[in-house]
Image (cartoon, rainbow, N blue to C red; front, side, top):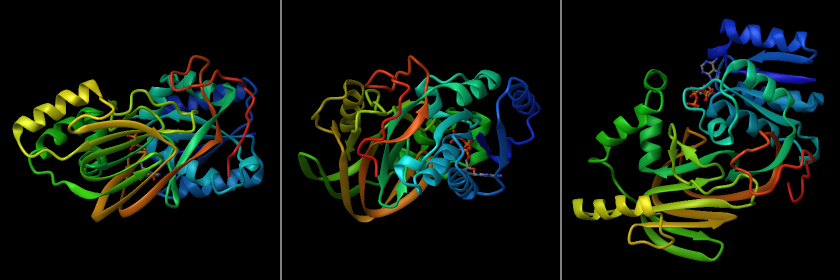
Length: 310
Ligand SMILES: Nc1ncnc2c1ncn2[C@@H]1O[C@H](COP(=O)(O)OP(=O)(O)OP(=O)(O)O)[C@@H](O)[C@H]1O
């Protein structure tokens, strides 16, 4: 049996009802459970997994996927059902990057039927994420953009408000450590990508793969003048491994210890931490992805190995 955990905001969409009924007529054993408030999707996903369902589908945006992943990760690796995604959010950054269909009928069929592939699940302290964690400037922007405005403007809201805030941002000094490196840095932006995009289509870690056991890191350091900002912007396009302001690298873990609480987003959901550690659990979840999914480093097998997952 499959369980669709549906963000209550989308529950009454007539096209969604039709899509669910059509799948059932086609033979799918699909039950729908609707959330009422934040936190419900996590509890519902855990409960469905403990009931022994074979697949849990997150129906919503990146925040809903985030909640469902956190529910599934409460079970031991071998007891986790496969995960499907029905993109119903305003950004759907992960679903878009995975190459999942966006039309409702096709998306629901894909979420139900695509064979699952083992994917990595990073964890920041006690919270998992599937797509991306960001810290610093971008995180302030995302967490202060009202949901209704996000929905109204789609991905555009981030860049409009981002441009306005750019003149008032403050840097976040701290110490970063990762496998093979360590440095003091005054952070402008930190992005830790399991997927490639965040904030409504911004490709912060365009080379990231979701099954390589690594985080793709984008580190942008503080700039002091307009001239330095132009250098930083140019480096952002070139993505050097070690530029004056921009650094990119891969690591299976990273820690940060700052002076002040750093605003963060985990899969777009706001969070705040002065110090934290992020670590990847390789192959910890089985995710329904298309044959030609651009986020895969390894060819899709259809067989889920849960190697090294805890
Ligand atoms: N019934 C509900 N009403 C309002 N909010 C809800 C409800 N159920 C869950 N939520 C919360 O809504 C938040 C955002 O949901 P979701 O990610 O599905 O949509 P979105 O923000 O439009 O998508 P995206 O992150 O892709 O832009 C989540 O944090 C979730 O906890």
